[in-house]
Image 1 (tube, one colour):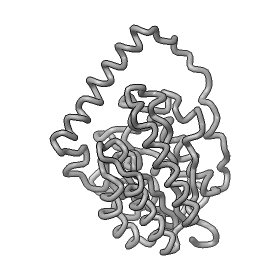
Image 2 (cartoon, helix red, strand yellow):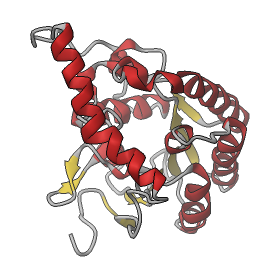
Image 3 (cartoon, helix red, strand yellow):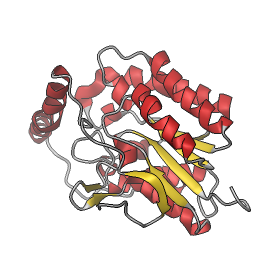
Length: 265
């Protein structure tokens, strides 16, 4: 950090940090990390930004694959958002997952970076079929809180706010944030980092939903379409031992000026 301003921002994580749900793989992804970089650039125009996230990665993979390259970039600010892919696995261990996240907190803060992270909202409010994972979300969130406090990590507490589970903040797959959701996450992290101009407006309701409420039959049909279109393919990949991130690499592995696309895009 120079004169109180960040000059090197590095983002570590999985699909949310990569930006899935905000743009696409043809036109390009944006996501909360890009949006946070833009917020930082508004007060620190010289900031350079790298995004090492790859979709489908477990917390241990984020640590193994991204922490070393992140430290080599000498960030003065970093975001670490990982663990959701773990809690969706049959053999989820909240202590093991949180240990990987905490190791990244420790290494990055130990190297002098200001680190920020989030707690995860209860996705079962928008995807009732996923209700069995609610205790897992709570368990992981509690461990993230403890680890963040231990290492002085800025924590954006998204989980307590009803707005976080407004369906308009979520993409059609109900696993990734929509563009509006990614913008809210970036605002939450900016607030946690005390960026000038940030505030708690991200916690407030989006506003009235003018869409007509769906009846029971339409709601059930929508759940079945979601299960067939998103949950089924996800489960099939798990059974085959495959990941949505197979063969993928970080889309922005080097520090570049905010707004400058990576080479090849």
